[in-house]
Image (cartoon, rainbow, N blue to C red; front, side):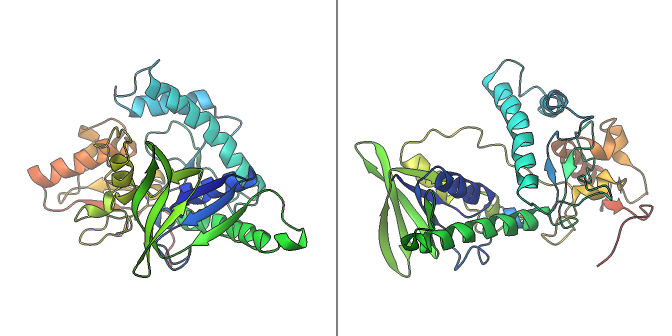
Length: 322
């Protein structure tokens, strides 16, 4: 039975672990927190929903077109990047349908269908939310429960109850480096409780997230330091597109609290100190332009003509307060 290391316990790591276990592998799920619940990555902090063309009135083709347009010329049709967009749009819809079928607690309409919402750069309502603006936390809890089931299944394998592979958790582990044998990755060296431990495997999946935590202002977890990317580079991996770090346009000033894009999707507008919607002069889509356009517009306004930028949601009747 193949041995697979998965480094990271966010959505990517847990999905990779579950997929490998379902395929019959013995999986070591390795992460820095004392437990999955105690890990502080980016997944559980995500407020906005999941974009997927699952509505009968929507299409994967339309989702691809919106994504290419948001790429502002960086994703040219016919390129490898465009093929990646097509793959993600198509497989994303499949993955979301699979999540819903498995019981993912998406917010639903009275008729039982997902309550799809509109967000920036999309031409259709295709955003799935869960727990209101706590979609990341809902997805994190849902996947963690599935991992726990696999762990319990492995524990019962001696009784003949286990099917396929299993997952063994390795909490409290910080990645030190990837192990190489004749130029091939054969495991991971981790630091755990003051000791260095080598975890060998037939395959190692690095799902440790990005490096947004190194910036002074960040809404992601401070553990997002790029350790996995650095370890992969030192092992010989070729890195690409490292300059693409996303800055969210609406973060409460002086904090790391992100104000969900769903507020703008529901009609929230950005104002300067004079009460003017300055983004209408930047892009005809104004607050619903792609995030990079909105973030750049906000930054320019702060530098050029206003001390503050305000998100006005007073006119949104369904906005609730907890």
